[in-house]
Length: 505
Ligand code: NDP
Image (cartoon, rainbow, N blue to C red; front, side, top):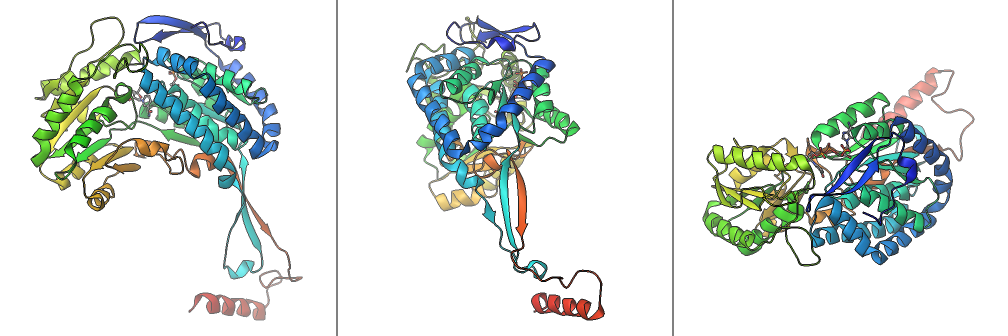
């Protein structure tokens, strides 16, 4: 790609990695790999730049983000092209990513100060009568953000946004599969007036990611559970806090009283969006018996209409490519395993034969939890659907998973839908929709079980990038408090009476 500048200083190790357009099977760039020393050099510069960025205040940092928002909208064609070329996304999948990013910039520019203002802490302890207690938040220093390839703008840079707003310097390690978006983001921030070295891109492979952990004061990681465990292990060496957004196997529960048309349309869209390469996509579906046939019929009819291929502009295709080469084998093996164990392919089921890396949008039925497609993260364009007797069975199946990222429940009775949602073991459950809680930026988004640790968005989405400091102030005081030396019987007795008077009632 000729119009994305690859920073020269990243040419540290002498090694390069080719970047592919997965929808066309062509190489679009060669990116240099940062080695350990280069990452340490970035961190040294980031540490020097960070105090002035923190001192600049929320308004100044927010102004940079709002200029970045304008830049993104003014340069949307370039950004959409860059995202789509290195991921193989459709135009609309890339457009969705850009829209969410714009929303994220707006949210954090507006709300960072509110979440990080000093908090007064009320207390009733007899030991600290008259004392004032407050908590303040201070930027940790250098934040390392390690991003995946499925959403190079949203799942990578948008986790940098609250870190920057909190006053940190940030080093972003993009996936080696999709680094070009990160380089364009760097250009965006530079053009928007961010101080030099406050934001840096550490392009490279897993070893570069490990080096980023070593130099960071806090790490935000999004990716597989397996790599998340490696990140946590590495961070343990320096006791560096980590926040992990990992895999999911998100269930969709369709009740007999659901709007079946909407549920089937949503299953197709939220199961196949971004070719199913979404951590919070619909990965498996449980449908109550009375509406099962109708649901499957409508889902298959919907999927039959979909066009798959390379992005040739707005409205050209609904389903794009598989971004990451090993993903094709994972998706194929999940389908083959299911068929070998008795599943039926209602539609799709094969990899594409032309140039580019595609797997047909696929609906599987007669599936069971003996099959990998129902228990392991597929992260591809497959929708396995299982018939259940009742809601209890659906909830039991939904919770039969090592993951607990997200889920959705479909019923026209929203009170019943919410009651079911409360029984599902997941960090977020959406009733009569899916995924969209992601753009409710005020609410935490994070996984239970092996889907993660911590959360993004909401108060914790920015406070996790801060140290807390508790300050206690004594405005008026006796020369000597009752509990101070020397111990006297009358003072000890009085203290005892005081405790009984306050807590003994
Ligand atoms: P990984 O989890 O391996 O990669 C995520 C990021 O971590 C990448 O930037 C990667 O760099 C980096 N990384 C790899 N090894 C290390 C390490 N030892 N220390 C620090 N950083 C490291 O995801 P994959 O790309 O391998 O995808 C595998 C599976 O992960 C998918 O099949 C899917 O199930 C799941 N996934 C989940 C996502 C989510 O949103 N939760 C997103 C993407 C994938 P590099 O790419 O350079 O190796």
